[in-house]
Length: 387
Image 1 (cartoon, rainbow, N blue to C red):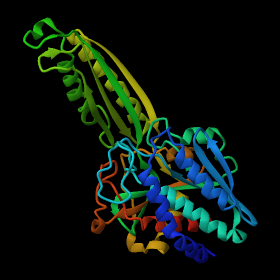
Image 2 (image 1 turned 135 degrees about the vertical axis):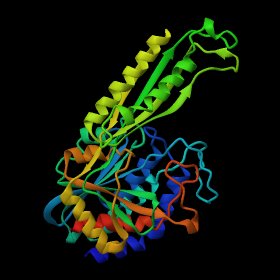
Image 3 (image 1 turned 180 degrees about the vertical axis):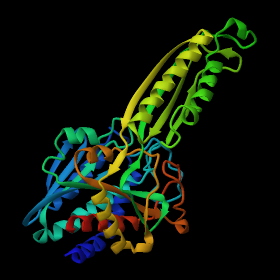
Image 4 (image 1 turned 60 degrees about the vertical axis):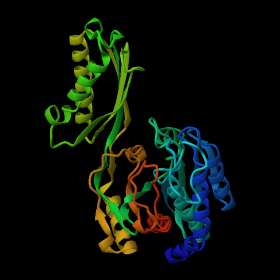
């Protein structure tokens, strides 16, 4: 029956491309999704699935009941976009200024819809049920997964799988990993209040730009001198805002950045030292500071048994030579919340193809992937259900 489901997926491929490109042209930011979940829900209702909308806020779930008793397998895809201007020269370029699918969530959505379509065609042969989870707001902390779980989307689920297309992994390849795979992601903001003045008389001011520069330099040393170097961590200041003129010292500046860790100990120590450094430097310079630290998604841990199930199916699907173990990834992913509740696994499917300029990294203005990844991802989902 797997082969029959594969054929149904292949027959639907052109329609899935159309759906993907439509979503790509009309992307929606996290927590603002309205059109996208409506399209998803309508497609799934037409397949005869039991659809719930507004799950956790803007999420959609659909239950496919098999004809025979068995476990319930959940499959998840995310569908939000990013605040980035699309710079690709393609017919399906985003029509929304400053918003684009720069991470592949449109591919994930099309893949899961394809799997739902194919599995609905062979439901009389299914042992157990399949729950399709279409999640909103993966890109922005606190994310949509937590809210959907709180709204009961994992009730009666036995196991869950998720996939992410990768623009750095060649088309046709799959990566898996047992245990920890992706980092926890937190964000911090440091507000520095000094005393403004004229650029020609800095001795009469308390310069928050200079103070902020010292904080940035010292924060960069936390990972090399304050944390265990065998426990990977990244601390990056990504924003430094303040000032409006070349000769005016501002009253205040704001720094913001991200912390990526795998262990809870490194996570705790990173926050501790960021606070300590900012407060000490500001105090010594006669300035005030306020440090805001927000814990984001936890690190993602795959169940070893389910990760090996992914590997076995991937080797059969793509060939052993096209399956590899993923390196540790500093990217964060709120699929981690599902894996805290249920056994399961998250894996990556290649989408890079230089022949069509699908070579740019995620969150790049020219990001794109080979749409053939829809088929491989859909087939992986189908086989995970049958196996």
